[in-house]
Structures are given as structure tokens and as C-alpha cells.
Length: 157
Image 1 (cartoon, rainbow, N blue to C red):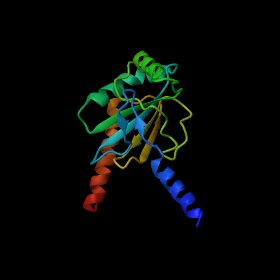
Image 2 (spheres, helix red, strand yellow):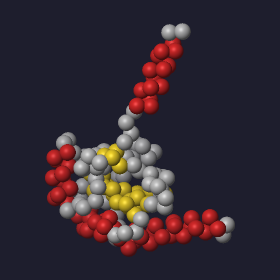
Image 3 (spheres, rainbow, N blue to C red):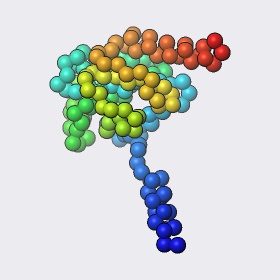
């Protein structure tokens, strides 16, 4: 009978584990979206020159009304929110940046090269991984292809 409280405590602690993500402003961020939303998760670093060239493209994608959300991940991380804020400012990033790396939660290894972008469907599943700088047009074309594929599957084609 003494094992019941132990099992109960374990179950409660599992339910309380925090797998939530937060952005640089302290807002909660879910990796899955509702409806047909898509998410681009971009890994970047201050020392990565191709990352610096890619950021304006991702900023445009972030600001466009296209059903695509952009989230950033600082490859080198930051010890404090203030340090992360300085990194974001230095890079000119205008989209939300996660407070920690989502790779483990997504069942993925951290990327080995930068910049690296992951495309997530509305269920929060990685459907594509891209290495190297991406443009807004390239990412939108990729997403359009997946959307069209989904429409074809839904219609039985």
C-alpha cells in the first residue's frame, strides 16, 4: 500500500513538467498551431555571417499575412534574458526567439550547421529541414507545396 503514494507523486510530477516555451518577451509559445498554420524555426548565431544575411528575409516572412509563423533559436544560447535581448538587437531580429532549444521536444538533434531552418506543420511536426540561408520566396514556395499536397490528399487525388 505504500507504493500507491509514490506512484501518485510520480504521476503528478510528470503532469507538472514544464515543456512550455517562452519568447524573449516572456510570452508562452506553443510549437503546434491551430488550423492550417505553419511554423519556421530558425537557428542562428551572432558569429554566423550567412545568418545575418538571412534575417531580413525571415523578418519579411514574419510580418507578411500568410499563415506562417517564424520562431528563432539562438544557437549559442544566452545566460540571461538581457543577453538574449542584446543578441536579438545585434542581429536585427523582429520575430519571436525561443528561450531554449526545442530540438529534444521535437525528437531532433541540434543542427550541425548554420543557418538551419525547420518547417513545422500545424501539428508541430517537423516536415522539412533546410541548411543554409533561405529566402522568403523559397520558404513560401516550400510551404505552398506542402499545402497543395495536403489538399490533394484531402480530396482523394
